[in-house]
Image 1 (cartoon, rainbow, N blue to C red):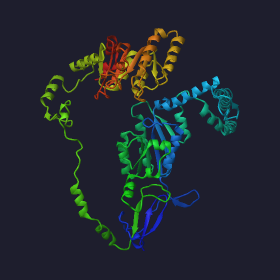
Image 2: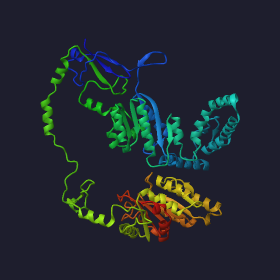
Image 3: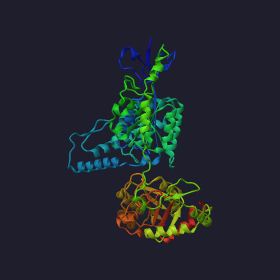
Image 4: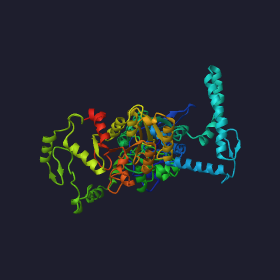
Amino acid sequence: MNSLFLHNPINVHTYIHPTKHSPKPLLRYPRIQCSSIEIDMVKTHQGIYAPKHDKVVVLWDLDNKPPRGPPFDAAVSLKSLAHRFGDLVDFSAYANRHAFIHLPQWVLDQRRERKTLDILERKGAITPSEPYTCGVCGRKCKTHLDLKKHFRQLHQRERQKKLNRLNSLKGMKRRRFRERFLRGDHKYNEAARRLVVPKVGYGLASELRRAGVFVKTVEDKPQAADWALKRQMVHSMSRGIDWLVLVSDDSDFSEMLRRAREANLGTVVVGDMDRALGRHADLWVPWIGVENGDIQEGDLMPKKMDRMRNEGSDEFFTNEDGEFDRNFMLVFSDDEDEDEDYEDQEDDGEIDELCDEWVPELLIPSLNEDLYYEPPVLESAAGPHTTINGNELLESYFAALEKYGVGSCGPRGFYGTIDVHLDCEARIAKFLGTPNSILYSYGLSTMFSAIPASSKKGDIIVADEGVHWGIQNGLYLSRSTVMYFKHNDMDSLRETLENITSKNKRAKKLRRYIVVEAVYQNSGQIAPLDEIIKLKEKYRFRVLMDESNSIGVLGSSGRGLTEYYGIPVEKLDIITTAMGHALATEGGFCTGNARVIDHQVWKMSYVIYNQ
């Protein structure tokens, strides 16, 4: 008897062979001659054998794809998405320290709105329809501020007393007291999430852990979160998982996704746009749809399945519960000639005709007349022969090699400086309107060296909490006293400067800096330079501003934030720039007055050691 079986790790379906009971034969799947069926079965705790479920792992790159709403809701939505593919065995999220201290715009708006409501309630301008109720004891309060005051003075103090009591006990008494403490602690935690504002960040890590996510803070190094995620991918693949769900848009994971698919794993990418990373996965899901809970069954149709549905196939790689896995068909037949009949039904002539008619589209369009007026274009790959605008340039190569050699072969402070370095520094200073400038061979080295060269141990630096990793590392290397103000919040900056100057009697004798970005790399917001300059002059601080993302972008001629605001560049003490953005080249530069640049020439580790 001919029968058709669908091998499915979740459910096993049995069908009558369609050639005997259906006028339309099933031609999509090649038939395989075999004598037995292998079904993945596992033994449950009750001793009953049941079909094996798919194992799903979710890996979340928080640096690249932070939640744009409540983190707990986003994590729960991701878990529900993962459960559609099988059993979730691991859910991990990785990010550096900045992701957990950064305040996104929706949190700032939420807190600002709550603060406005508190002020109106305190003045009596508005009255809540129902009194605020304490989630721990049930007490009713007229205003939200009264509820917070009641919670801090009563429940926070009582909880702290219980924690102190718990730490003082030992042995069996400690265990019993801890059990009683944990039984009633959930009410406090629920109320604290609504009333207590975290001192740092907005509780991202704690909310994700509450949703059952393993949260890992990586080192403050470039690509540290990516490396940790890749190591976790390799570890998960070695554990025999079936589905890998990656929440990221970072194209650096494309190679890992290819390796996962080669290992016969199902891959799902959750991102904002279907770019390079989404093309390497079996399924791409929009991140905004996952957060809003708008994902439908049609959105979860893998590319292979979706193509089969469009072609009108009768069977899909799904089971009755709508769960997906990499299924395969096994056909048992006593007739050895059936496979030959199947192959004969393909029309080879039609396929050859379609292949002959296909004309590939050029990846690079041909040059038109307008493009000939553009600057010279490098048309060849890196090698011994270079073609620019159709001309092979060899004499220019030889002339440059005879004059400069193959490299500087030494740091700038010794014999690594050549005339093109000095000419470029002079052009940068002339373009920006500053007395002098200095070049760096690497963009991040600008911040790594300029900040420690200007500020030492004992000096005070007030920095925006949203500055990028390069500036954070420069602040760490300076060994100065670093204080952060809220991201792009001038009231917080004013309060911080006031506290420094009024409470520290030695502050006026120390070097004091304000460190900001013109356009913040992590948020895209523009710094209010006019207000920063006013505060700088009022409290007598120096300003160090990084213009990596504003040079060539802001201003009528691309001179950056100073031209954008119409502020003289002399108002800034130090300007640093990485040239890998709008300038589209390698390296960086620092510019300012002549004394600042001369000091860097003699004191910077980059000038002395780097080549």
